[in-house]
Length: 326
Image (tube, rainbow, N blue to C red):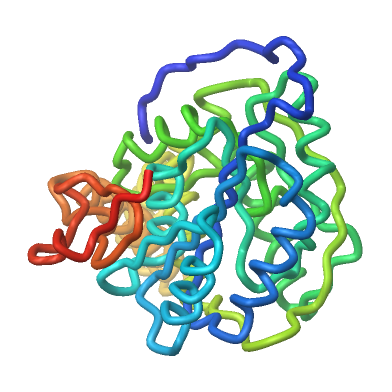
């Protein structure tokens, strides 16, 4: 389990709404059809702010996503972008955006536009009360029922069964102080999970209900395999209980195995074998988590950008394509 120190014990003094200098981080993977509408809706909803940045993060798209982003950036100096060298996954994509956000607050908004950008004002209003992070909670969620059911099961296992502190029903639609978001990225956890890490850094977070709508263009990039992997990273990376269960399963299997050996009972032998296999499976997954905490490749590499990028985050040979408008 990651060992991090709390940096904040409560809400900050209230902040005037007009003082929210904001970077909207928009991770994208093959969202070419959504880029124009995403830009337009963000500009319409938040464009009255003097200090606004719209930061698109192209997570190795294979369609025209990057070309559409470049086109928007050429027309509006408030638009920045990072293009990753390949598909690194959603945690890596938004982590890159958080690291290179220009302003003191980051608003995470997915390019599928299922969260209307206008709903950001609800998050800003709550953050102005002194919170470090505000998470949107979907009202009348417009996703297929298997996705909704899986989310409920995932939340129950994480919070109730494993005792992991995560904002209940929280989503990626969130407003976070940039300094805290960067602190989480810089931890370089072997199995990063933003929702479970933030409560370990600050207690000053809250949730607000927000509207949700169906995806207008394209298809979801979320897969069953990806969701399962992400869930296991959370379960094994942020709770000691799975490893404890492995120990107890092994201990419970010992007397059963001994009794099976003495009595020759096939049923008892089967129970002992099941306990041993359960213990082995849990310990194997825990060891996989531990191995990911060792030296590993960068969380992301950037191939192209129109903002200054640290050399360590650039793909070799990409420096000449990294811009510097700031």
